[in-house]
Image (cartoon, rainbow over all chains, first blue to last red; front, side, top):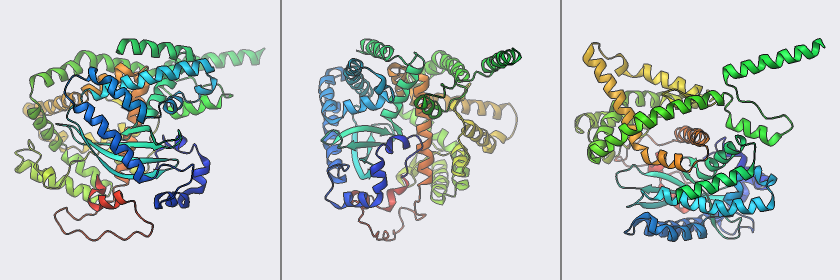
Length: 214
Length: 281
């Protein structure tokens, strides 16, 4: 599978890995891996399986989705590199933000991500999922899964797992070819370009969004 | 003085032109990050696109979405599934043409068998019998064909009624319409009425299937237009790649499969388990 044009800039973040190329990837598949390597496919698959099982157990438990929010938030916070995703989604504006703004934005991003994901999961009652193959790509490992909901065609969902934060964490979810973090980043970029590139305006908008959605 | 006047005149002409054509203003040349972002969005007529987005959004809010909601409320899921199957089955000629033009014999075979089986045993396409017989459903259109033939995508467009697209996909949409035998089928009031019913049913069926995701995007996106733009691009790109990377064997599922070629580098366990059958997925 080749990276799409849209994905290329991110995937090429680490020129080093790109240069070392195939030989490096095959050693990562075979077994022992370096300190900066992507997670081994087997361990990434196991991580996705256990995280997915936890999510499915909570979603399929009886009761309305609102009551499950704390449990889902806990799983998301432990399995997702939220700080890393937050930084990614702000893109080039991360560098222009003041440390105070970075802190405020990251805190808000945590609750935006949790409400967005739990909002999406509300209609997933009765969900089941299966883990397919895992393959390394650049400094991450992509684990393919199929999500099946009653009365819906099966959905292809890829989980992008990275070791960058010290432990295997989810850094992106790609549903039917659409990346969650890329979409979020383009949303923020468009908002910022229509609001004079003001990070303060973005922070206010996020606050408002959290207030209206909770 | 004259140079200055010329420059002013030039600026004002450019300004009028930009207003008429609704061109997005590129960022200043000394800001490489902003320029990279502008190129990535590839939306040179963004102001015009946003006008059409607003028009379509209003049409959707007051007409299509309520119609889709009423359809979901009034019609039980199983009947809706049957309607969807009939509509998909009617799309088979366009699907098959795209599969063949892309040189994908296995997909073309699936499309043919699905049409034959579902039109007969499936009672005019109401029941998707072919899926359980090993001929899974797939999507395809002329936009994907053009992409795989190497046609460039072109800038992002948001067209009235049609919605998010680009010159390549809009051309593909036109080609699909021309290739569709139902466009040319017979004449007379009854046939054209059926054609309109099919178009209307397709619109309501597709809208009903995305009611929840679209509501969710409008609720959570700070700039829904930009979010739909990004989603549309990514989704099309993944569809194009799925067709390009589909190297499925032409041997049907029920026929004894050849042994997979022994790869020289070790294949990950799970990939080996998936086997050749699932490659078309």
